[in-house]
Length: 123
Picture 1 (spheres, one colour):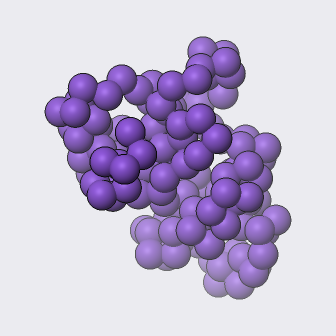
Picture 2 (cartoon, helix red, strand yellow; picture 1 turned 30 degrees about the horizontal axis):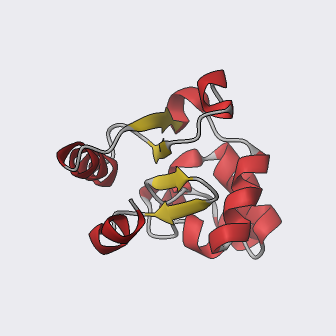
């Protein structure tokens, strides 16, 4: 991760810039005048420690997008291996597009995906 994020205490949006749901989240946050920092998986990647932290908060099943194009592109053997958190994290590190987007981190909490009701309650 970029060093700017290591001590950043505000809102961090994790995702991929060309993802429609991530773009929708950017617009919502800007419309509501909420400052955020963007962490682009394609540029900065994602590490095991961060994924483990998120899994503790919401579970690996919530983070892992089995409806994604990336998931469908994996081999049957790779798909069959995803039966627990450790295996899911390995795939999420190797193929970060399989992580549901966006993941929004604020304080010691995260939200996964676009959810306006949760945004209004959280920010």
